[in-house]
Length: 494
Image (cartoon, rainbow, N blue to C red; front, top):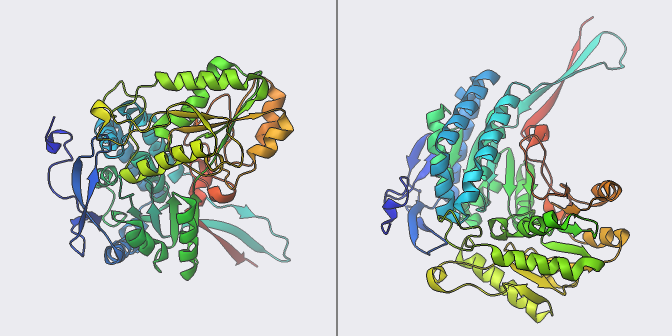
């Protein structure tokens, strides 16, 4: 397969346009940008480059839909649309998975396994569409005064997603918006815009009215910034770096729009000597190496009890060497490329920093440039030993397949050191001791604590961060509340 058009039916050689108001439009500026296959460096498609003018058009379309046809949809009708979309995603999952793999590099085995998650989220939100309700409240005022609450959609949502899981990230934003009756302007990451655009086609097929879902590819400093600051956007839902998250909070001040943020992490993964090491070794390894480490909640700070430190870290390094690195289209690949040249430079820069600071690479540590990997953005799974808490590789989010292994001696010490970070997204604990498990579950300051597993996710279970990892929750019933306003109603009846 040499021609790009042979790779995927969506790659037809034509520039990909913006999806606004149910129509496919050129960018107002006429500009386009390239999106690349990170395994080979080849151009996949030219994509329309949206900017502030295009965001204005998309927000206007979303507002018209919100106050117009979409406002007349009953909960059961919104549910039916979501269920149809879920069926379409399930029917096209191989195609969508391949598009994710081509555009951002994840192994096809991983992107195909997103079927349960992607379809499950849509069906969960569909179920919640008919389960949203206020409550009656027995107030204490004299006389006959009835009080109750209504839950109403926030309005127009600006959704900005990262590139590390385009299909599921898109669904995580549009699913709750559709369930609650909001409308969406989605700004996908410029590194991986293709799957969100294909999903827009499926939204049309599912019966989503024009303007309810709009997709405007573009760059963060133009399209993203315009969406975050737009005076007619009622809420921004953002996933990405904490630096951009801070910018979005500042931009939201113009009209005090609602904001929910799922940001970065430097998550502790804690292994006690009493753990089942046969599970903990691959568990701790894939807590970082999955998706080439490009996961916000990856367990990149591996704390290991000192009495087993050398043995355990050595076993994780040995495990890392068994993982097959390659083009994500190969079903045997377990670790694909990083998403872009920029990300490659970032991660390899941290590999150099780690060695300069005195960390010792037990595996990996250098870019892969031989044979078929030469043109891609490949970094092997890397395990650094002799890491100190004050090293940059132990403090800063690398977003690559890099483990920083750190010894500890007792439970109180590791709680303090595990929490000694500005982030608080994920965490892991490996132990057979149920007392330790419960103590750590309460003591760790993070939105998720995985015990004897890592990165488990379910549509019914909320996910989000503490501290610089953001606020608000995605998944669970809490997710829908992020898209709803609560109105109190008082009626004097006497």
